[in-house]
Picture 1: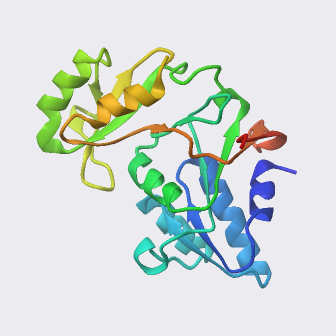
Picture 2: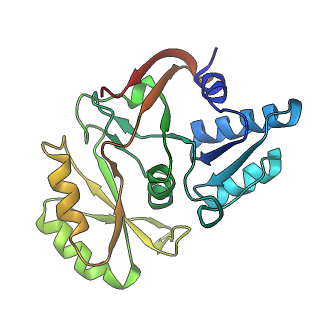
Length: 224
């Protein structure tokens, strides 16, 4: 069994499901679409990105919005780092603000990762994305530099790229973070910061896979 198949098993009938972004999350969306198309399973999804929304429509998952439904049963998403206590860094795919809103609107957050995403301490992989309002670029650059984050704008061919929210992303090269809660507080206090890739205390279950097919290797649950 793969972690994708295991995640589909966790979806109850008539569920409201947050649909994550990125490779593992999109594999889940495809598998959920197959299940919806071949059985009587009825679900509605809230996508975390325009790309995920397009994929969900393609595979036949009916979509809804948080305005319409409020709370979700669960969200299934990926992550870029998972610490032993299940704190996460997300956002390499640039959807972290919508991902955090959808996750926070869910009773359960299920994370799908390969073993390479498991780290002893957040920041080990060396990058923390921060989404900012375009107007705030000079201010956020100065303030993040003062925090030791040395931000690098997300660009392609010399052009600043925008998120689905119309904002910009600063990638902050970092090392292992000694106090993620404090860092999150300091970054979020900067005017113009919309959100960070730090997802602290949010994940309930992490399914860990191996290989390109995410064969099930282990699962990690948040201790109560």
